Image (cartoon, rainbow, N blue to C red):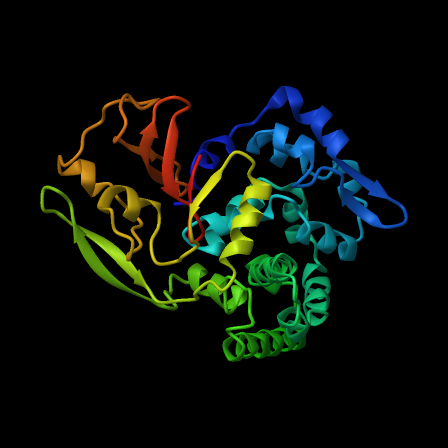
Length: 336
């Protein structure tokens, strides 16, 4: 599940006729300061593009990418304007894989034989206590997001394979120390995870860190497996809201961030306390039937977006503009 709302559709759209002009205009390399994305959330032009166009505009020109030193590439990847997409999926690992598949900078970094060395160096330079002390909520959230991105990248097998035994041992000590700091300073933390590294490794191995299973019933009485989540709570709901509104112009945030429930649980079960990965039983047992394959035909219908791991559900609240009310991953309750 999955990139939420209309994002689930538009992210997969390739807009061929605008690729070259947008990419050339929006990304550039400067001799003095390194690579910079000249198109950023908050800019007027950012709001004029759909999400697929923003992703295309944020690609690094290939001639620049191949010549970019790995240290500079690490910095460019961590500042990728569309990295926030990662948090709108069932797991951060799942979201990371979608971001990776749609961003050439991350693809290139994972191919570099020295990626681990420079990523660990960047990780060593992060001071969690300094992040905890930041007074501005938005700045603290942005710094915490970059930490989440970095820890998730470090957990990828392509990166771990580049590290020596000594380098891997150093990384594991750093990760463990930061994990303990997050646990010990939960009230000061703005992070969406105690450890993006541990969460990513657990997801790759099919391990649930904080959850246990339960069931809910369809209208026809069939059991549907759900997850009761007991992981990280959010101390930064307002910052999450502002970040979503800046990065996804047109999305309206109408509820608080929570990991307790997701889009499927909300849309199909009306349940705000569980997480549902597969809602298909709701139509396979006859509780619901297909009414339209493209656009909804009536308010109150359920909208389901298939997507090979990127599925999404929502409730139709207005036919004009196909407005869908839904939950975006572990973040905000939104309509788009």
